[in-house]
Amino acid sequence: MKKLSIILLFIMSSLAVQAQDDFISKHFPTLMENEKFTKVYFSAKMFSMMANFTSAQEAEDFTAILPRLTGLRLVSSENIDGKPYYDKALSVLKREKYEVLMEVSEEGAMTKFMMKEGSGGRISEFVMLSIDAQNITLISLTGNMTMKDINMISESSVMEGLYKK
Image (cartoon, rainbow, N blue to C red; front, side):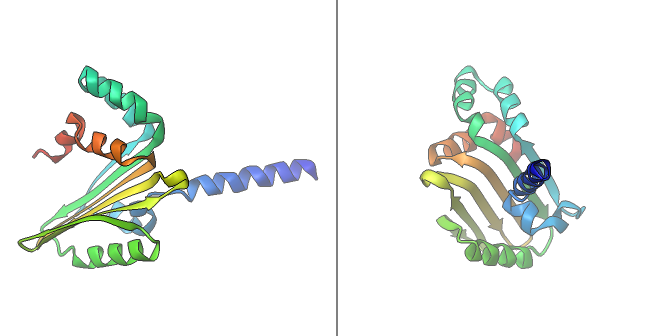
């Protein structure tokens, strides 16, 4: 009986770990297979390797926050009506009690930055939604972070490379 209990405990803990998906993969699994969308995923291992591609100062800063990052997922599409995706995302974010940090609206474009608070007042997930007439972008950063960590990642030279065309 004890052996069965240990096996069940192991299976349940494995399921709990798998259930900790990011916002995008959890609520938009069809986007992961949709060829109209560009998809980028950074695992925790990739974050640790990023320190090799940055300046010495950035590498030192990254080393401090890497253990707290578990993933980054970006899904984006151009020349698509993103309104249904945006509306669904906002609905889910509100239902799951993500907190709005900032909104930017200009010339038909809307960008929202939201977060889900984890234990100890830290951020367990940071989400950015951006939409205009023909484009949509969803970004999810997961881990056990502070706003300082998120700011450092967003300003890194590696992340700048994601936005260059």
